[in-house]
Amino acid sequence: MAIQPIRIFGDPVLRATAQPVTTFDKELRTLVGDLTETMLDAPGAGLAAPQLGISLRVFTYHVDGVTGHLINPDLSLSEEEQEGPEGCLSLPGLRYDTRRAYGVVARGFNMYGDPVTVEGTQLLARCIQHETDHLDGIVFIDRLDPEQRKAALRAIRETDWGSGPVPVVKVSPHSTFGAAR
Image (cartoon, rainbow, N blue to C red; front, side, top):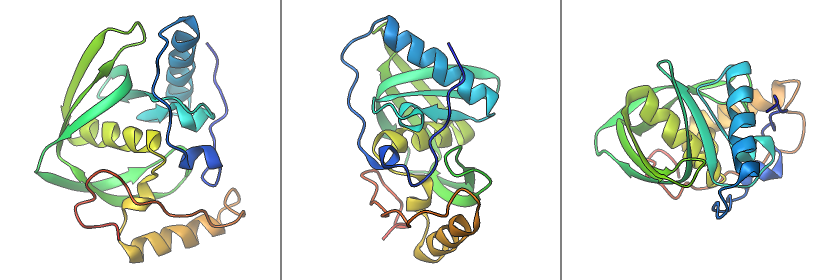
């Protein structure tokens, strides 16, 4: 296991839909270890495989002292909503209030192929939704209203890491609660 470089916004891998994991082997366990070490070193609340340049449906999380991972997640979202600050290791230094479901039930697999269910509210729910979005090629600024998104893109251009071309904004396949247009 090793700390890996995190891909920055504008990298095409962050906009691609990740492929489902079909082989639960040593290589996958190494990936989960690398994701976990990199996330904890950053530090972050979550990290998805595409953020390391690997287009697989895998993410790790570390919320309220609990560290875990989920492979091939399938989410059920609560109707109740929350709005709060959100950031991303692929958009360093930027935070914006983002609307998410208040609760989530996430079903998937662990690194050995065993079925698992993760249930959470508030920060854990936000983290799971954020990381699952990464697996669908969605970044959190895609969920912002048009005015906030414009401000975020302007802030990105002003950073030392965001001097490249402005990436395309994608529409999330998950509920955006009417915020994204």
